[in-house]
Image 1 (tube, helix red, strand yellow):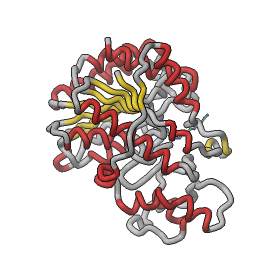
Image 2 (cartoon, protein in one colour):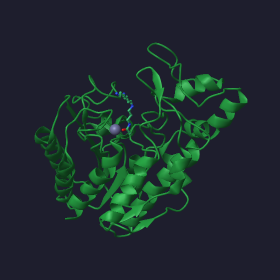
Image 3 (cartoon, rainbow, N blue to C red):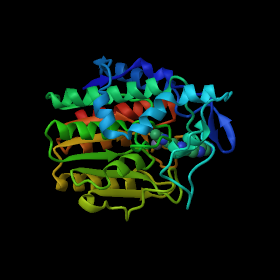
Length: 342
Ligand code: SP5
Ligand code: ZN
């Protein structure tokens, strides 16, 4: 399996994440990928290539134009306004406030386009987000050209980003770009399976009204886990998308004996849906020692999950999402790939 990876991910490395009322070094940091790369090498998966330039037309087809303009210019506007620190959202359009009118003031705009305050932006964030999207696009193109599977080693991750909001460490929804590209390349039906510990609210939101892309997510229940405000089991899609969304929320302490049941249920739904191509949002934060999550998967469980996913026999693109037990991120992510390849 070929891996697509850009060194430009390093351009996104804020100093600060708001966590528990303190600023800490972000959990989502560049070193995460070094562990994945070294594990890929160790396991002989050494076909690692840099993507070309991002396909901006496809990114513009996915995201709102004003949102993309915001991401591109936010840092220069922030600096021009005299802000001393990194971009952090502080004011949000909450219940019964205006949600359709972006303010002129950059501090207001940041709150308008953010869905959470933990994610800081800096001068390199836009370039890094584009390089991450480019890796996803290159992996998809490789599979569309006939490869059975590909790994997009994306950073920053994407599954929390909607067409018009960033947060949860995500800016552009890489998995959604891949699903849409498969549709454009002729697949009638595409499935996105999100095994990151967190609900893929962005991906769900993007495809919620569509019947051509099935979305399934296994995650910490919204009552207990970020992103808190989406991811319930009764969210099943709407309009043409009714029945094409499946959520599997699970409580604190969930281990593989329960988790794999949800995985099998999601895989059965994907098979019944008749998907012709598959996108995996590959987070490893369901791991037992993840610092911000509460599932109890062990490293061999990720291998078994990969085996089960592989049994679908579909052309598959894996997009890296979260996973913050830094030293195990590589083992766990590559275990999924190796299980799939077995
Ligand atoms: C891609 C992805 O996995 N994004 C996750 C975003 C999670 N953001 C909120 C995290 C809240 C963590 N609280 C940490 C408490 C540590 N003791
Ligand atoms: Zn996550």
